[in-house]
Image 1 (spheres, helix red, strand yellow):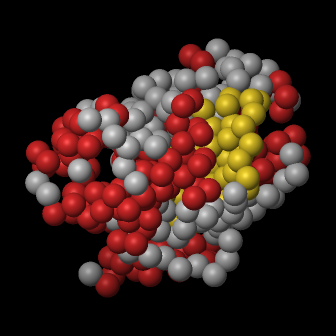
Image 2 (cartoon, one colour):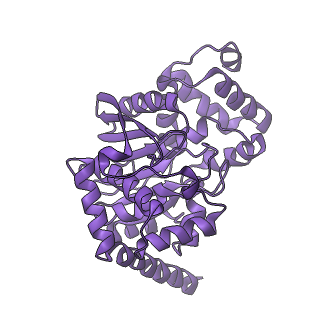
Length: 336
């Protein structure tokens, strides 16, 4: 199979599924070769669907009997903006259960797990407790390697390679709750179609796959390419910030240095601060609510998010999550 990849021959669904099985058994050198050859060749939607199915089948599952969503980006855009998808997950949980699936930083300034912990919310690695938290307060953060043994094995190899691999793309697609709705940001515009087709192949109910003018987020500084997936139907289009009622901003206003900067800016917005960072978070949250069918348009979703911020409901939502999480941690410490 490695020879096929080196020869830039695409794999079938079944071959892609089998490749994940091989990675479970192979050593670091062989896995590095697979990942490098795949990245050089370029991933196809069929290969991606095979990888998704294989990893899902091997994952530690969380069964929740209600519709849920995830907001997640691939990382790897190399820009270093505030973690809008993380903020959007907390905001969206006011309207729909959100199982946020993420990891610590591998190719960016800070990953979603880094920011979540900085916000005072522990990452969940226990499936039963994660299920209980999601059912009780509509939010949980799932630390990816804890639910996917192969991710834990691959993570140090990805770090040593220091470049994007197929696992950057896979991260947002293998949430162990298998959410019905997703907002997924990708680091390259050419990935939008590939990811959208893969999601359709594995049976997503509805998703928006976005690339925003160089970002794996919805852009406030330029147009965003969107691939809207409704089961088997896929529709591509562009959205300008002005179409949703926002003024464009300078990208520099959205940059952060580390997890502390990102979390502070998110907290500022949650507690009432206005400006480009708030607009960026509201814009991404609007796309999330539209993806989850909680609003008929981006404009309607924007109004829902802005009203919730202005009324202090998002700050209350954060405190509710923190409060539940702290009781959760205290109980765990008592048991130990």
